[in-house]
Amino acid sequence: MAKILVIDDDGIVRDALKAFLTRSGHSVSCAADGLNGLTLFKNSKFDIAILDREMPNLTGSQVLAKIKDISKATPVIILTGYDSSEDAAEYIKAGAASFISKAMGLEPLLEEIENFVSSPQSGVGKNLGKDSERREKPKILIADDEEPVRNMLSRFAVSAGFEPIAAANGLEAVEIFKKEKPDIVLLDIYMPVKNGIEALEEIISFDSKAAVMMITGNDEQELARICLKKGAFDYISKPINLKNLEISVKTRMAISD
Image 1: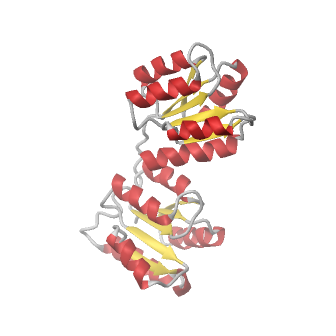
Image 2 (image 1 turned 180 degrees about the vertical axis):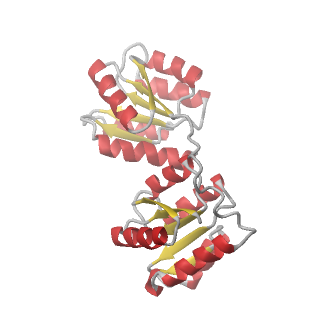
């Protein structure tokens, strides 16, 4: 049997698929959006991915592209509530194995999965029962001259699956970045020795693909927009909404991997 990943924001669809597929002997994991689904796929080996076309955070086409970057061999079945032959052709061209309408019910999907499982060429089922191959935790550099903020963001980083590295000023942040090559950088704009904008410029000049997010005050929107032009991918204002921060950094991780 197969190890299957279901990514769909419709809880009824997820529950139904998990119930039917588990009853058929498959191992099923579920995600409610593209970002979490892609995280699951990266951290574990799946034989088949079932992907909704329309989801929050990352669209079906974005997740399909990332899955194909990670594993070209994994069959991806696209589920859709829209019957469009043009869309179907685009998804197949992008690497999807099948494009199935939800209006047709579960039977066509179950038949398609059984076709993959029964095909000796597909290799489906080889991952069932194997332990997930985990990557090392991604690193996040937190640069802020306020110790309570650094501590709060470090706790957030751990809970979100990152390894935090702290810096108390912009100079430390640049030195740590060059040494550690973190996956994400959080830079406060106002810091001693070297401010956040100066640190951003130096980091981007060292690595043009660096993922830097600025931390701003409520009255610093114009400075934040300047930072975006200088290479930051996003900014967030204090007091920091940790849920929004998590979505932003994980979406950036998913897109940049």
